[in-house]
Length: 250
Image (tube, rainbow, N blue to C red; front, side):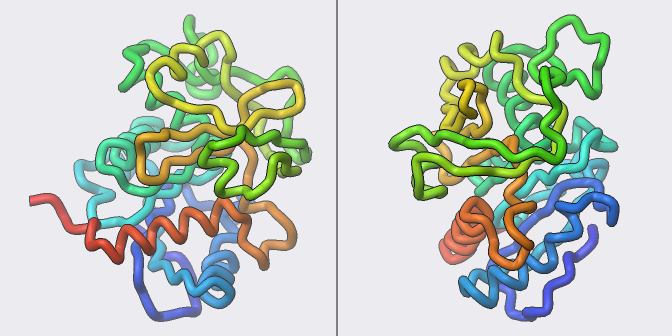
């Protein structure tokens, strides 16, 4: 476990940054500045710790956190650890954000554990898999920007605050549309799509705060103004801490 750099010493909520931290991943490098901006501009102070995906495999590795953010940077060293982070947030009602690879693995965990699609896979991890939920995009979005249309009444709309937004991507994999109706039937909502109707945001309406984006809000602007998605996660974490919901299980 590695504590994220944060110049503000007051701690109000504990945030788990689940991912294999690397200085070569631009999204990772932006985290300290985003944490400082949240504290300084929004008075949302987070005590953030990096949790490698291999560590996230351990039982209760994420107990006591007020929010879980499954970060970009795939392939993860441990797919099992990434999926365990999603499952912990989903089952325990812990605020969750998954971005880029985090989005992909949020869908994968839901498909396997909620929809009963136990054998479904991710093409980056199982390129020869027979049944894949996450597949190579027809056109890579690495380094691209694109319009996301937000569904009225969704968590995505409440967070983004607009019907359309332009977002930055750095990914080459996305959801296989052939399986998305199964996820919908089991309660997942797709609150944002691109101009061709391809899913770019997902959420769980029955969860206190569960949001995943294929785009990377970490890359918005110059990194000094947190994206609304990141602010919303921080606000949910602070609210979770204020309610005393981060106690370790007995």
